[in-house]
Image (cartoon, rainbow, N blue to C red):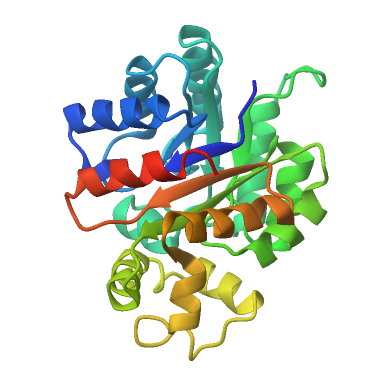
Length: 286
């Protein structure tokens, strides 16, 4: 499977069926190689993958991420194999340990220690798998231990909410043979106040989650950067803004740091799909 260079990450749980189809067509029509989607309180991950694959012909579709507490490893592997059989090897299974509120509060499961839980899950995925037939599985890895595990037992990593500084460290841990598919939020907006307001609104849900906060502190941000909606320095790093060329420069910084694939996430006002599609068109040649 060729993952390609540039993809799109989008919060698909906000869209109905027709809007999902429009999104897939917009991403594929602008020449992006992949479309990544989350698993939250919206659509079931494997069902959504099948729908998006059915609405495209060349697009690689990747879960970012499928929650390991939502289905056992046997079921996830069978879904991965089935979808790739039916849709021409275009599905990447991105896995993550998610967050305590989503696991214990929403699903009613016990949230285990992340590294042992992911190791056991990947062992289940890889069980009876020939050594020379590596499955298209990647891990939502932020810290060095999870990155090392993803290098050992999967095709690579799909870090979320990170900077090129993190990308460089991740690339060094993963090595040159692994996929490093990095998410980066973007908005084509020249007004600093408007751009940062969009960024703060989009980031608010993540800033209360320990997994992300701990990683941002490892990256050199401070508690002050993470207070009161986020400092300008923090927001500017998490959500690139400006004209198209300024945003492209920020995306290219991830490639220069060692990313093999960058999935941009268009950030826009709720329901403004025209703005989303303008961004997809403007940034397609990054």
